[in-house]
Image (cartoon, rainbow, N blue to C red; front, side):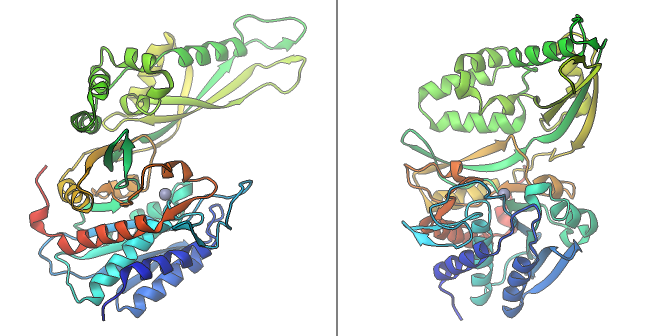
Length: 444
Ligand SMILES: [Zn+2]
């Protein structure tokens, strides 16, 4: 029996939006069991995984002909809060209006989950056997570190992903406009999270009698220095690829800017000149630490003897926490009391084997758009799957018309996906699943 894939994915997304999976607390259970029911009734092999009854994950497998390695698709069904936001249509209604489906998660990332499910079900209903097993993993808890979701699944059920080399996940495949030029970023890598805490100690005493060089003064020195200076610039292969390919398709002012960004000698100067416009590029070219929490001082007339300062730190692939500590010390020009409070190793070795195939699918869908490798300054569940040697590509294709910047609606009010974008993505993923074969994987 065939399937009207478009109606199916629209209905499915509306149903998914109806489950309030705001994380915390998540409570993805009902949503995951609903999806399991669909896959079971379609005759797929499924398994429910979770260390907590309210926080479940769903594994689905469509067995292939063993002519290619298994291919993984994964997505999360938890969403971020809508508290304090003003929505035009209820965030959990899935209402259709102005050619869009509205609701929390339509872009991040229940929309993509609906695409993946619909494409897989269509393929099976048509009786098309994939070249290699297709594994669909729908997880919980992405928005809060993946502890109950991807991390748990990868730590405890690694065997389910035996021989998987390639996966598709979030961030990528959607239309971005540079003037009139259309590009389609495909995420190929991401940074590693590395949080840092500094402690400043100094003389205390009565507020009426100032101290010099105390904890406050040291804090001020560190914050001020970091606000003015950059850590050293590093041109990693992922970013080099991204900027070179962007240079090739964009007009000349961009070419000049990217060229000087890719030169360690001129990189920081260029960022200074670009001011706010360089904000997007700075984290791609540096390890970064952003101060976010200060603790110290309890009473207005007491000079604190101790202050702590915490940083959201992010490290480029190929570098570790020791590199970051050294760079901070050099930047400050002196020793400070610092410790690494949290380091989650991310993907390290880039494997471009499936990239060309994904790019070809996007070019087939929109021949005016150029696929571009994209490196993300944030983190996704890709870091958990990378521990199993799996290369993730951000591939949740969506066609966006020029005008509305949909990326700005992620995690904010009035999040919505154009129906046209949902159809575009479902068909692109269907093309991936049905066209996937060993000959599509290039040595990289
Ligand atoms: Zn997401």
